[in-house]
Length: 178
Image (cartoon, rainbow, N blue to C red; front, side, top):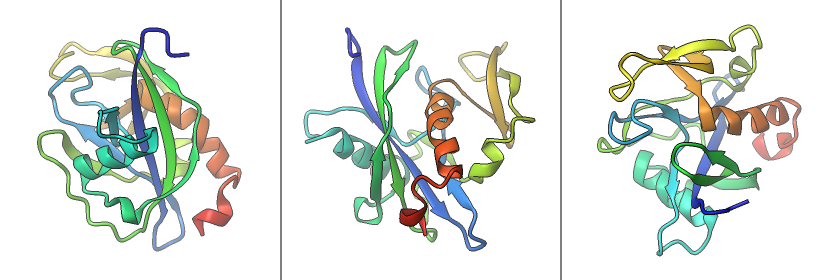
């Protein structure tokens, strides 16, 4: 699958809140770079120091939002997805994290950390064609997406969630997420 593509890894961190609702961690990227202003998952490209794709995802999550690897329980490697414009093959890893994490976003990379409820992301009534705008796309781009607050979830991140959210809601990792 990696014909001429670069390799990256992302973490799909999930936790149960005080009411028992399953939540997923999303980041809002700064306006820098090709993915500027987009909702994403903590992660990035593989570096020479990384021993594995899991190590990449954990390192990047710590760099971007201060998520300590000791607080992360990796549950599964999900199907890789392609990130079209950047020619990356992205390897997502589902991970359980504690609910009392204090986020420490790296201001050079992350504007905000969001934790929407998983069941809200899978409501078919909210998925539709939406206008995504950013510093790089001031006139906007119509995309298949889901509104998350004032933001639009779309693209590679949405494709990762299209795989994992129905499986989470079906209870595939329920025992590990209690």
